[in-house]
Length: 577
Image (cartoon, rainbow, N blue to C red):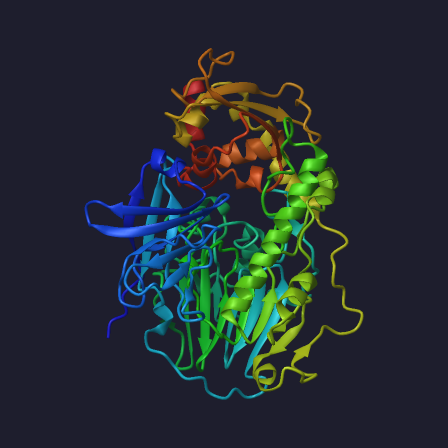
């Protein structure tokens, strides 16, 4: 049987007006061209969707008038009831779960309902778990999202970020990686890189690896924006990058295979992975918001996921209006708690034998980011593990760098004292110094680049970026370390309605954002045609906006959709001649 790659089918499109008009609670829709019916459930900003089709015998759901909370619908055939907020059938209780559809925003803030096909691709060619010998499968935590897996006689590494910063200069490693990390990477038979963010795709790490082993096999998912879109620019020589389709088993040897899955919320860039050895599954959902559209294998041997929060410039880098320090602190506290509860529920729903929180071990350690470090409080992995263990017998593991989990031992007896070998006594766990110098010097060098002697770089850059026909005006201000105007720096307006660069704000009604950016990072990003994640997720900007709304299209374009090749500055300089 030929495996077919996983595809997405669009079942329903809502116009921006229909999407904006969704009411809290339950919304019914019909696709007029197919005659098929759908239910959308809205709770604050969150949307869930499913087919309006009862699992029992395909009846149609209508509003359940007995439900005062507005969360359930009732089937017209046999009165089965579905709670749309959880997608679980409540009558008969404990019977089925309704299959969820993926909800996505389109370019213009319209909504798409998508179905993944096949929905559970890991069920093709199932394998029964075989007994594992002690020492046969070992998982060693290195740092952040980087795990070193020994699977029989093969070694596989996830997301190696082991040196240097991520997001320009905003993130640094919290944990001290084991001193033999480079040897470990060099010994790997394959490396999986989940997505293009620099805390997962770390060019400083890969540079060191490529100097020793250019041809190391690296596997990435077939995302819309290629994971290695910037390889040529990076100067890193890697010759064995393999892009694989979603939802198909990749056979490594007779016992080992893996499958890469897409994220339901960011299919253009995020992926996650299932690794299976002798029928035992290891599920790594990495940073995915809705991995595989919310459908994942239950009862895997080991599951790992992110947990920490704090991976965004919001709200720490915002000011003005409601963004007081008190509001920010309260918002961060509430959001972290929501994330913690969501992760705990996800893990409890999936019932893995062992769970490990990872991919949140970063710190804003550069002295100039002291404010962010103090404000951007992250979740505590032990707190999450305690929540998960409450009313469940899931074994949890808070990893320390160099610690090794022996899967065979842990599955046989979770209390086995040799199941998890901690790093030797006296091993350094947390980093207390970072080599800021070389990385900051690279950024600083961009400030003096001759491109910026010519103010026409602004038009050149934003024309290259290609975002327009949107009623937003931004004011860009180049700043020093403390976000004060940089002496002799640029301070200019961009009107995205017609992509003009006016001297003052236009008289028509328009949305407005003021973006102050550290000059070194801004110019480095401009010069190299990099994505604005470095600025936004890296905490290198300070923002004010009026009105206070998130311009998804604008940020999505500059964070994900910029052209794949940088601006042609050489030609630009010739023209400036």
